[in-house]
Image (cartoon, rainbow, N blue to C red; front, side):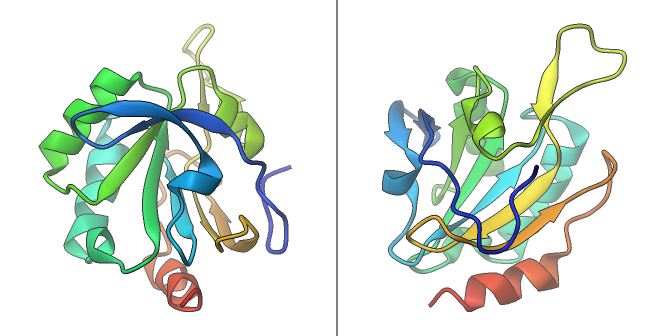
Length: 160
């Protein structure tokens, strides 16, 4: 079951990409002092990822103080770093969820119809405090819905 308010997200570990390098990092170390927002997209450079992340950067999410902005996608770290360079936002980092550990920890991994042996996380945004407790969770019920940006930003504001 996808995360809901009050749940504690497991402390999964995965390669954390910063646009240049990557290092296996537990979620607890990737979060900012006030927590973070985990944004799940299927694949780097997909139309949805490009659309969502361009909007989020324009909205100022890359400049949040003490709140980490972490993308989660099934691509490897080299593709994640290339996507971050394309995005041009050094304060956003991505989890390279190659083995699906992050998607599984969030209980968001699903098989993709028409894509044999491929699974990705559902499109989602989860706001967690510094203890990984969920303050807000949105899980799209389709593959193209936009994020409820105002609701997520209100949850982010409540972290500080």
